[in-house]
Image (cartoon, rainbow, N blue to C red; front, side, top):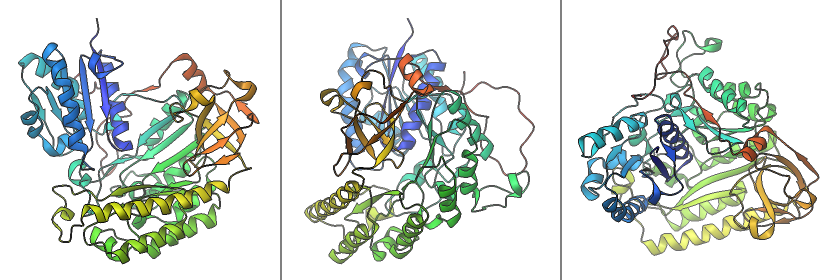
Length: 501
């Protein structure tokens, strides 16, 4: 019988997409997905190092599997991702029952490392310092029939003092536009209706492009590259929704706003991290914008797209943050009127400049400010959501978005602006599938979701719904090979197998 695998994912959308690549690699190598980690022949933990509790979660889960591993010595455990890149051999020292440790730069090595660990009967630790192949050149087992992640870049050139990501994922490397669009078309051909363009800083896309051989004679570092990519997505037949995450306010340009407003399939939703409303804290964070610039971007976005839903990230309790700094954050939140905000208590991460800054705040001060921020955000998001009561929205039906759907008889999905909608199915119960599209009227608003309690006004069956009904998950092969390069592309290479296969 084929050996089975299970992938456990922590962290951001980039990690979720990397896990799709890990699953694709393992299935290409002959493994079959299992229903749970305890029943698997291979368990892969794809880790995150951004939050302080990431270490505890990983080692807690590794400890949970230790008795299983003792009973089934042929079981293999692999740890990858950002925490693996950071801790390296420390993982095997603390959890010697782990078989493989691999980093963010060599996902494609996993099948070979597993075989090597089995053959040598010892742990294999392989951490590269730079990317060997662009992740999107690897096969993927997509988790959704209707929505797909597409990486346009990896790495980050910013030096935010609280963030460990640049040291773990390296400097920014961008894919050529043709490679990105080829992957989008491949997903659409599989029935996918929505793509999200991924990057640590999507709107700095194109920073490494050179003069020779680039589309439109693009100059090195041309700031129009991301807007051009959004517009090009608008020309892909069958692609109904385009999203992107996350842009950096420093690099946000007017042509991106124009591309969002003028390209019909680009959703009027924007996730743009604020982090703090205090200019002094932003300076200490080494965030190269100030509150006035941030609010100016929002003003321009809403002038071009009055229906735009804007979400953000905010950190409370950064070292040296005063009560006045925190109150300025609340002021910016009230002025920006976010539709949602991901709020975090500052977490000290070894290896970041902020970890050694003076004036680290007491836990009770951070907690108290965090609770005040949550109350402020919830008041605003609730008011913004109430403005939508009585409006008709288009919902792309999703899986797993509504935890109470089975009890309430509703289904759930996302409106074009990204808001979560729980809707009644009426006489269409049993006919609506994940991946289908419905139009329905909002009847009730809560701070974090909308309800539509009347029967849908319209229901459109889609190819994504057909795939969901048939139990098919999109599978995409790697798109082209190798890292992006400056200058004219070389002649087409001979067909190559990926990652040691």
